[in-house]
Length: 105
Image (cartoon, rainbow, N blue to C red; front, top):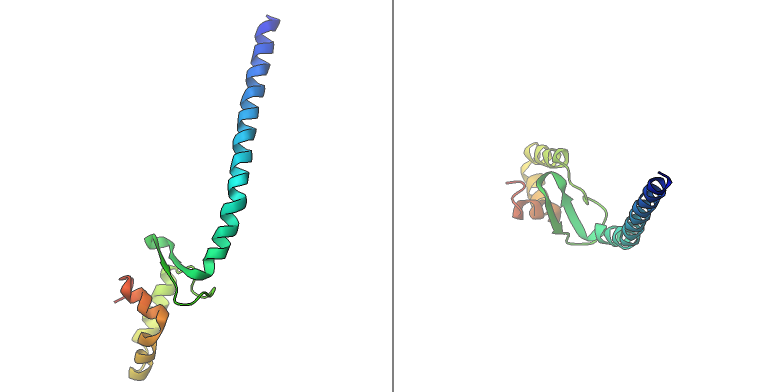
């Protein structure tokens, strides 16, 4: 009877060791992925709702993550703009990228 208890303890210890090794491997991977993701942020636009990632004209932190409300705000701003303001908005690199990707028309 005691042999089964010892075997059970060994089995649990082995499982915990395996889990610990897996978590350690994830930690090692995360140490590289997180800094690389932070470094990449200023170079790309991310549109999570549409699953799109595309490069920016210039590396900045503005318009890095684009939500649907950001897209709606841009459309409302464009629709309410005067003729000259519409031309200025169309010449904006961010607006052009969204048009190229078919996010706005």
